Image 1 (tube, rainbow, N blue to C red):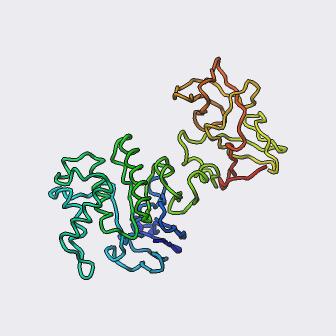
Image 2: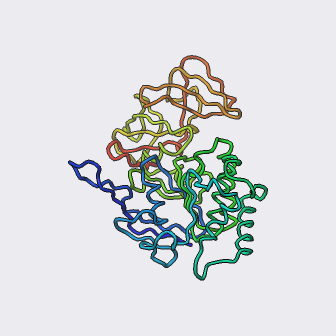
Image 3: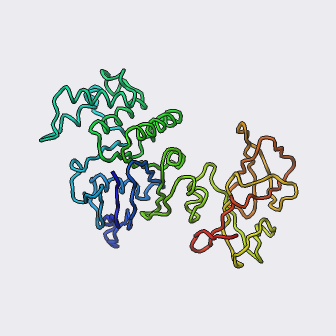
Length: 362
């Protein structure tokens, strides 16, 4: 089921009685989510991603714009008529019901032509439990399950009706690191097996990039960039996207373009043909540094953090906004009070100092 959001906007009234200025949570969002894909809605807290999800499922009413499932305009339909399944951050399981009863609950509330007999409901509930691999726990209650198992129950309950659209609102944030990794892999497997169009809301860029077919990066209610995860990482359209994606994050320097060369701290570190002379922000991915005794980017006070196959060189530069992290091969050994780098051109991004938009060169 494709989802088409057309100029979707949501404004909330201001809580400031003096100003009475509306708060725009989602601002003119237009995008088509292809049928059968997993789309990650990504951004910091307060960016509008959860509000967008609530608009899609019908928990919020848009101020303007349309929401279309397939060829059907569902903008004014109540949530129960949209054919959606939703999994919340806190699981929202019924503590007094067993796992099987929790999964059965949505089927027991069907009315009219969709109503099922008891045997069919049991069959569908057991199929949903098998899909998320919790068949052994059907007689337990939620408090007897681990966090990961509870999350699987919530997913099974959302899937049991075979919804047209599956919505996941930060479903992994309550799990520890190992469980998050396992559960996100399970979510991807389930989505592929069912082929249900899925929208996944998270503030964790690693989660979104690892399982999504495409990601939508938001800031202050406005879509910043949409694309395949690797493409957005490699070609950010502005400084916000470059800083938001990547672990460790991109290193940001103050720089200047003069005569087709990029200068950082007075040293010409890279040739950037085609750009006019101007002050710029320079973003360098951690993997964009190459230790080089002849390198023109000289940093101070290096130390190393062992990461196994690679090491992280942590150092300083007067033109950098924070300590620099460079990911290099563990074969590199750092001595002395300085370290010199040359740069990989495809890992260096330049941004205008006023608009913070990406400047394309070469």
